[in-house]
Length: 185
Image (cartoon, rainbow, N blue to C red; front, side, top):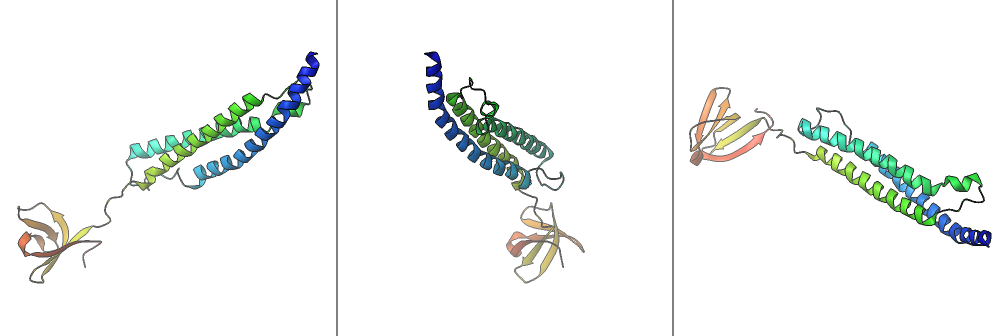
């Protein structure tokens, strides 16, 4: 009587296992996209090209490596459901465990999402604000006179700029416009 119960359990579990395998194969496509995102988006870039502090660059690199590791674990976990080894052995006594397969599929999906989040956080270091590209400041006075150079410390109530002719302190009431420029003419 037990052999007929086992056969009935196999007949019930087989369609559920096939549904889970089909779903897992679909998730494999998504996981490959996540792995591609981790690699292609440039999360790992050469140091020195980023305006981020060195510690942030190291943290981003560690998060990117963690994202890759988690993504590989997720691919393996979902792959065990997508391509079950017990079905390939032809063992008549082996019954597919649909509940275990469903749990592994859910775990693999969660791991994929964690890998994606880690990759996005690692990629955010590339958005670190860069230092201003301006190297000089142009000041125009109310009389039309103009000065250009590096800002320097000076007396209160004035803006001081180092020009080719020396340091000039322009009183704030005599300033019509102050703007950053890439270089002085």
